Amino acid sequence: SALRLMKQNGAKLILLCNPQNPISRAWEKEELEQLQEWLPTVQVKLGLSYCGGKVDDYLSILKLVYESSESQLKELKTLYEQQDLKAYTIQIHGLKGQLLNIGATELSNDAKRLEQAGKEEDTEFIDANLESFVKKNRELLELLKEVLKTYQLIEEQVTEEAPVSDLSQVVKDIQKSLDDFDFAQASKLIHSVQKEGLSKEDAALMEELCVLVEDMDIDKMQELLNGYQKS
Image (cartoon, rainbow, N blue to C red; front, side, top):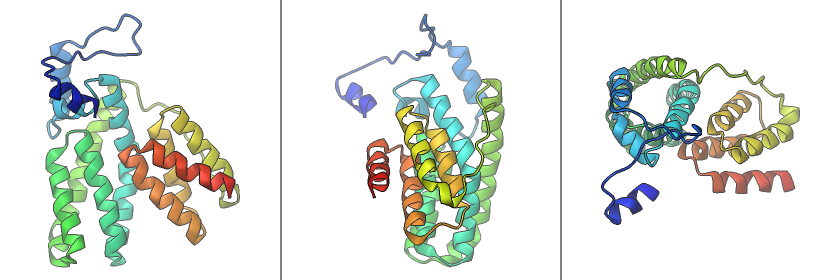
């Protein structure tokens, strides 16, 4: 990443600022300390470092996690209840990555252990730890909600779920969201379509997009979307 490259080149200081602010006001130390106080279970500085020190980008990722996690947690529990350990492992892998991206290292490590248990088909470990993991995630989501409300980032227009017959339009909307680098909106669109009765092929596409949007792999997502629109 750009941050790792900066470290390799000997960078000693990263200036945290708001790129949407025309005067590029740097965040005060007290403001960053306040954000850390609001999110005690998150290593805010670590999450910021993954965003190259850009606070607005970090807040956008917090918003993405807030808007997508609840449906992901429900899906995770459903997959495990169905004993679909392969899909369960893919789902927990995505959660592990997005938790690490915001600096929630303890929860990310919990997800890593649950992922390994899925690979090893260790249902005893999953039975003992999954509910606690889900509960901790929901507690984090409540904290994120308050932070996002403070920064006025969750008062957005609700997107209605699209019918299966109009999946092509949803794909175009997802593509537009990616063009605008609006991962939160792309994630919302993907999850809304997943609730519908999709064909096996379309469901597989949306499942793959779901994992990719969590990893913010825009190139691979656009490749899949372009292939769908040409088919």
